[in-house]
Image 1: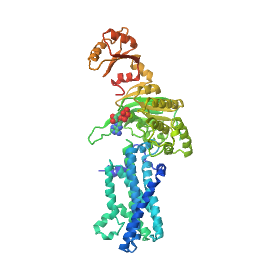
Image 2 (image 1 turned 180 degrees about the horizontal axis):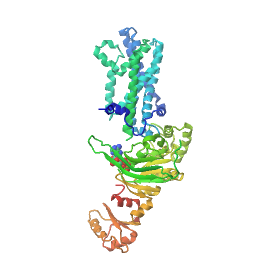
Image 3 (image 1 turned 90 degrees about the horizontal axis):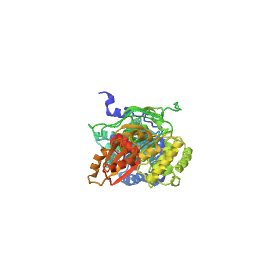
Image 4 (image 1 turned 30 degrees about the horizontal axis):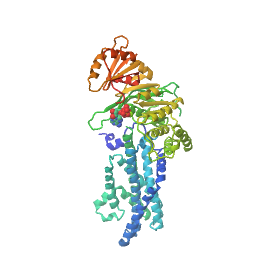
Length: 270
Length: 331
Ligand SMILES: Nc1ncnc2c1ncn2[C@@H]1O[C@H](COP(=O)(O)OP(=O)(O)OP(=O)(O)O)[C@@H](O)[C@H]1O
Ligand SMILES: [Mg+2]
């Protein structure tokens, strides 16, 4: 068997009907979404409160009972975890529900493909938008962390770009998965995947509570890498090993984006 | 980069063009929607594809619009190959798809704005064109309206306005008036006619023969993925039909229809006045083709046929289609 017969490589590199997939015109997708959301700013605002409420209830409330975790106050420990979760949630929400709606009912991608836009522009544009939404929440949350004294190091300046990376990786994979969904029922699978990841990836307590194998399992999940990065940055515990987290998320983003574009091609350019 | 093509080179050229859809299920049969069609589009003309449901019109339009890869044959658009230059081709096309693909989350004006942006046009330029185009399709007073509450005819007009935002050289319209009431259709026809006057080249599909006759300089009759005939509406009628047609109807279930059919066959090619060339039977009527319909009616009466109702009319593309395929266009 040659490598080109592997489904993944075929998906990534296979012959394309209309030349390259593009991507450079992605900003115009963001322009379109800004036009739409200008009127829906209240809906945008709601996403901001979720991590803040979590921080208040779990960080501050629960923190009173737990005392220090991993050598820092519990709020300081849990806040970067919540930051990662909110970056993930913001991106996933937009790249799954909204993209599914546009794919199935909107026909707006069909309209776009009648113009010089290509599938790569659409995929990249939608993923970037999904992540941009998350970025607004992340920035606000990070500001709250700074004001609340939860940030221990100047390395935290890098936390914002990292939330972008997290958002992009989850947005890309979210959009790729959405392209395989047939009905709204399939979205239960999204919840099924996100919920345990949210609870068990180390947002709320160190992985040291797990046995070796559970730990290895958790470390294969993407959210763990996002949390690890953000926590190391805000607590000022930076080390070379973090590059591995970055690499993981970059690869995830790349594969997600290419699969999403290929799937759009498959679904729309029939 | 300017495309160097001589003025009379065809804008679109298709040779043996095919579209085969893969089977819906594993192990199913692939489906041939377009089965080797040849046509050329010349600058400034209105070119039509006339055919019934499933003839392959939309499949052909989508291949021209570079949103459907060709399965075989050759297709050249504006001197370019869609497989290589789809974006550059699309930059010079306007497309009105069969089903409206307006952006329901945006208002009327914003639909044009963002569509222009997809073409990379500047905002100021788009704003100027938007004002003209909304005026052109009589939607200027609805500019700030949302799209949803617009009537079918208005949505169609908005889609046409949108397709013109990039001042396309070729405008592709897939069933521009299907589902519109007669008044709305006339408005659309009028606008398309003005575009033609202004020098835009139009390709359109329709299953309305009157639309084809009104608008098209040249058309092809398409059926089952193939081209059955090609020419101007008048050519086609002259070539495939008589000048006039006599339609006769009978009371359903009386048996008159069947007996009349047998008698009418005796009138074919008699050489006498009122002689008919041929006849077609439809479920509810019989069509008798003759150059003199009134004389044919007299001959019908003379042979002892007494229809419940009769009508003499001029031949139309409907008759051409019926003759070529044995079926009616709109069923
Ligand atoms: N994506 C597809 N996959 C499989 N078959 C398809 C697909 N699109 C169209 N077909 C089939 O191809 C044939 C031609 O369809 P097409 O839409 O080109 O016809 P049409 O002439 O536009 O008809 P209509 O007047 O109904 O719009 C039809 O039988 C249709 O079912
Ligand atoms: Mg069609």
